[in-house]
Image (cartoon, rainbow over all chains, first blue to last red; front, side, top):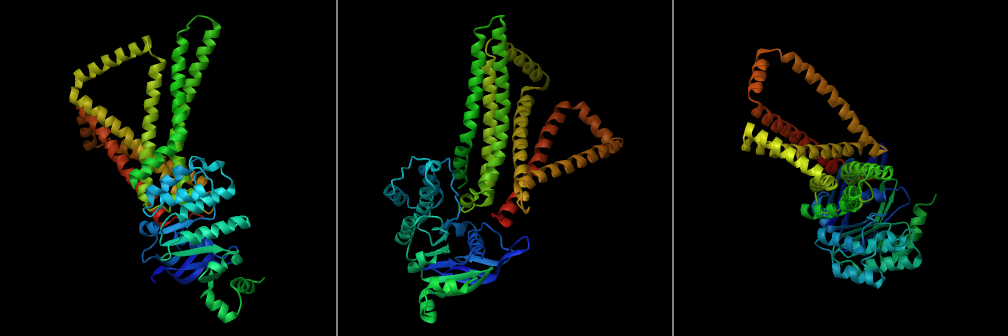
Length: 232
Length: 270
């Protein structure tokens, strides 16, 4: 197992408001990690820093040994928590874009997953329902043979059946050598697939353990422990 | 990777620019078409006036759209939701800026060509014939005065200056919009503010330079330079064209460096 993400004294503040506070973190390959925390805890900030969409206020972040940049972007597949696709494009055009830029993109697999959902490549993204748009986004991301998948709230705002689809798509398509970092607060839905858990609160890492350790040490499920740690 | 970016940017620009250009050509053709029904009636005059009016508006709109698309595509593609994809592609910020600049220049040039073509279409017949004749006469006169080589170089230098000026304009906007990203909120507006603030400072600096020039023009050195330029008008025009091109290239490099630094070291896609 190699180290995929390393944060050293990483701090990010927005106009004086600290979103991440001097965190040290190490994530290894071959794991599914849950990044769990309440709203505003710093999950999305950490994910954006991993993807080079934010610049750290201080400290360092390394992805597979390099700072976020062209090399890290080649190996990280990122699913943002918002609709990031150009709505005027057809599904095929966006697949072409992924094919052009990501050497690890599995085009055939992508079309296969799309056809299973009955989504035609010629359809424009703006004509798809919100749920189908989110599925297309997930399919695009999971069609990459990336070293690290970073999924920001992939199951938020979707119905339970879609949640199952999202989770099974993640499990069936990621490379076991790769790592998957899933940010969510719907813990019970993802708990069964997680290897490791990171609890984050007010920009601080409050817990980083394996799911087995949590169960053995506290005798509780991750969901129950989360409710205890983050109780108001 | 730049080639791929350019291909995708060309496609994105085409979405707004091609319809605009088709409208310009269609209105040019329409202006020509109604000339076949020329008469001294009020109805014809109204129709002709309306067609020419619409044609002129379409030309101005196409020019504005070419500029606006060039600037807004940069902002929208890199700093809004689209940025979550664009800025996570394995390409450098410099490649993004280069691609957007090249495609903006291409569409500006294409729009100018389309306008030229549609004006030619609209004025086809006597008017175009007379214009070509007059143009030929003027060019012939100039060539006989300065020589074919000098004239050809002027044309090349002029086109180069126009291209560099266009690139400079886009890169200035890219730099300003990138600096605007440092604002806490209303970042697009802040970018526009940066542009106008810079424009204002540049005007003041320009005025100061003119004053300084007026003062120094009285010195012996400047007088002898002025005398030399007066006696060598061909050289003066070459110097003017190349000099401005070099100045705009230098400023373009500066704006490119600013936009690149903001995107690579200060990006905060919130």
